[in-house]
Image 1: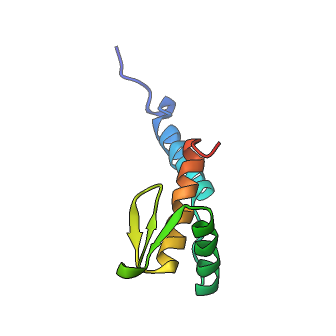
Image 2: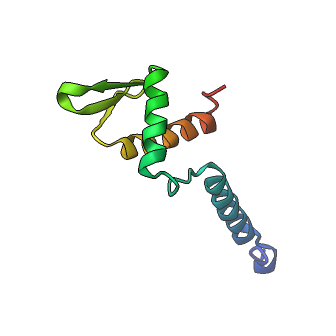
Amino acid sequence: MPGPDPHDDTSRDYEQFEKEQLAQDRGATSVDTADVDDTTAQDLVSELIDADIVSPVPEDQILVHEPSGTTFDSTTQLAVFHRGWMANRDADGEGE
């Protein structure tokens, strides 16, 4: 009995389709952090402090992101982290 016809093999098409879908999914869930300047970061961190999501520790000059327990010494780093953290929660359906 002859082997499968190589012209009927669609596995490469399926692999290409999966790669394209993964790229689209990553694009849809990626967070743009290029627009996080110092002013934007300070505003976001102030809002997070007011909402008890971030706790400042003045004696150590750090900020604690309470939901994750992660500490930061930069408002910009914290703002970028929080955006990514929220995007991940939303993608996992936890933000609902």
